[in-house]
Image 1 (cartoon, rainbow, N blue to C red):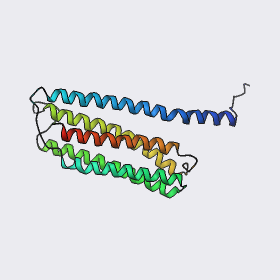
Image 2: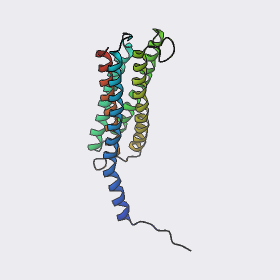
Image 3: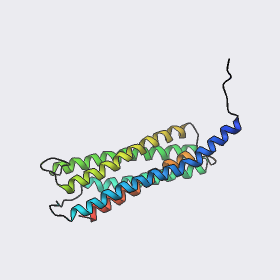
Image 4: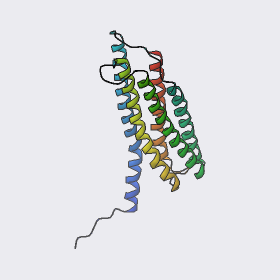
Length: 199
């Protein structure tokens, strides 16, 4: 009967440490890829807006509110990370939970914004569509799609927080979630200002 190889605790610890060190660079590679996608789309937006037949319209009111909500969500997640560094387990849970709830609120406000656009005749595709409206839908939808990935990450982080996995000595998972979520916050603020000023 063949013996199953079992790595020693030392090897397991080394593998875990190597995985931990590789996680942040991999996350940044992913973030840079997302930045390139949105940089390309916003550049295309500017080029297309200069060719004529470009409809001007006001941004939905809910987009203003959703901007405040996502900024607040970054603040609550920053709070959670500070609580982890102080070994305050309840503070971590509350911070991550509030961030998750605010993320859901942001998503709902984005949906309401699309409903407001449709109500004013701004649609994504079809005979009544205009490139300006189509770009707005595309940019906001892609951001929301990436935000859903962030919500899943927050759920995993919340589960780990409840299980007490984060403390002053171990904040890696919480830090990774925070970096991605803060990036989504900055990305939305950029898109909002871009769509507000570049007409």
